[in-house]
Image (cartoon, rainbow, N blue to C red):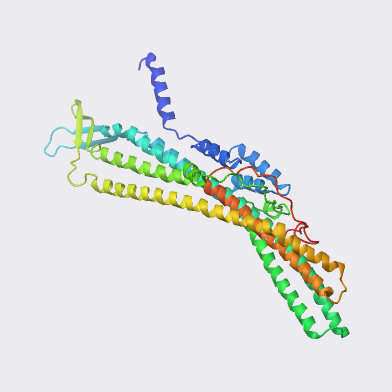
Length: 474
C-alpha cells in the first residue's frame, strides 16, 4: 500500500466504526427536557455514571426534612426503579435506528472440487452482497427514527403518570395521618365518656343502659381507629414504593403534618380538552404509531423485490496455479411469496393504529371532563365544611362548654358535641385529600405542568387534639 493512501483509508475506517456506534444518551435529553417543562422536576437515568452519586445526595437531602408534594414528586422521578427500567426502551429504540442505517453483511463462500477420473483440483472462492437493499436504507432509517420518536413520547407519558402517582400517594398518606390523629382524639373523648358512665352507674347515679351505651360507642371508635391505623400504614407503604425507597430511607421517611389548604381560586379551565389533545404524550404517541405503521407499509411495498438479486465476485484456482476471476450473481424468483401477506398484515395494523388514536383521543377528553368534575365537587364539599359544617360544630361545642352542668345538656352532650366537631374536621380532611388528588389527576389528564397555586384560603380552627396537632408516624 502506498504511504499516501494510509491516512485517507484510516480516516474512512474510523468513520465506519463510529458510524456504527450506538449513542449512549439514546434520546434521554429530549425526554428530560419535555418532562421538566411539564412537571417542574428533574429526571435522571441511572447508567452507572458519576452523576448517580450526586442524585443520591440530592435524594438524601430531600429526605432529611418533612417532605412536601413537590419533594415527593422529585424523589420519585429520580429514584423509582420501574421508571429507570422504562428508560432502557430508549436504548433499544436508538439501537434500532443505528441498525436500520447499516449495510447487510457480505456473504463469503468457498468450495474445493476433486477430480473423479483424474485431472486438476479446483478451488472456488466468492463474496456476494445483496446490493439492492442498500437503496432501502434511507426508508428504513426514517421508519426507525419515527419509531424512536414514538418511544420517546411513550416514555415521557410514563414519567407524567409516575409524577401523578407520586402526588396522589403523598396526599393520601398525609390525609390518612391527619384522619388518624382526629380518630385518636375522638377515641380519647369516647374513652373518657365511657369511664364516666361506668363510675356513675357504679355510684347508682345512672342506669346500666347509659353505661352500656357509652361503652358500645367507645368500642365503635376503637375499631374505627384500628382501621385508620391500617389505612395510614398502607398509604405509607404505597408512598415508599412509589418513591423507590429502601432500607433506612424507607423507615426514616417523614412527611408534613397537614395537607395544604384550598387555593383561593382555580386556574383557568377553558379549552382544557383541546389542550389535552394538543399536548398529551399518549395522544402524540398514538398519532406517531399510526405514522410508523404507514411508513412500514411503504417499506414493505418497496422491499418486495430488493432481496431477490445478489451480485458478487468469484475466483477459481486450478492445480496448475492459474486463477480465474469474474463476476457472479444469483436471483430469487418471487413466485410464491411476494410480500402480500406482510403488506396485508401491516395494513390491518394501520387501521388498528388509527382506531387506537381515535380511542385515546376520546378517552383523553373524557378524562379531562371527569377530573374537572371531581376537582370542582371536592372543592365545593371542602368549602362547605370550612365555611359551614365546622363553624357550626365548633359553635355547639362552645355553647356546651358554657353550661357543662346544666340539666338540659349534661356532660354526655358536651362529649358528643366534641365528637361531632372532630368528625366535621375529619370530613374536611377527606374533602381536601379528594381535592388535591383530583388536582393531580387533572394535571395529568391535561398533560401539562401543574399551575402555580393561588394563596390558600384561611384554614378552619382545629379542635383541641384534632387534625392539626399530628401524631408520630404509624
